[in-house]
Length: 302
Image (tube, rainbow, N blue to C red):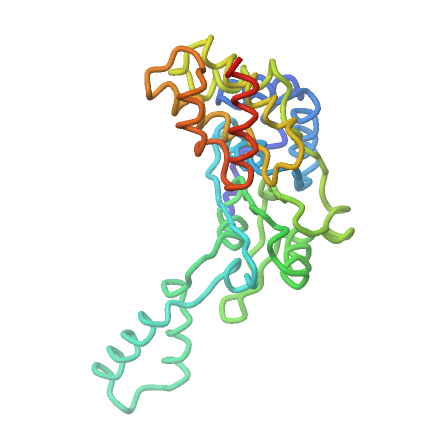
């Protein structure tokens, strides 16, 4: 169950500016709009739904919030076919079988079947999955990552839990969160989420950052990368993103990987040979790689 004496995350920051400053201390460089919606989520106990292209910092915000609030991060990774069992709880079947055999060996055939059955569904055999963990251990930060990969039924289940923060385990009773978890849902928008879930959340679209903010992100998250190299890599990535027809434009995560790869090779500035050799840090599709190689020759070759 939750610790009733734990601090309510709603009281952690006096203003959105305070939250933004603390996020920056963790290495997360966001804009004022994102800091504001995240602060309102804390104050209003509302889930935060983040959409945007992959690699724009949606998951990283949940990690930064957990660090800023000094709370555990509980992550639920969604995937096609996930159901409530993977999110809530399960029973440790192998341990239950061992327990049953031990009872039979010590108590014999005359043991009361009701007592034996009750002992099989004891707390010690319960396997808490992310949503149940978040309810029992709150306050925590619950990250529901890539909710768009789950199906409609799972989305409906999640909406019910977000509305009540109660989980009923038939064998043990109802578990309620005294303080609602801080919830961050992310979506890459591979499908549209239902309006009912969106209404429950505060919404924010995270776009690719501008030049100055992306440089600041690289300097914060990859301090081993020199200033000149960071500026050149970010400038190059921004131009690559503008190339038409890319299947997957590089996100901030790819910018960081590319800058670190070049720094690892000892580069102080971006040149065509090293940029082409390390292109796999930023580009993940063969078709995109062919287009970007041509762009690199145009941008850096002259």
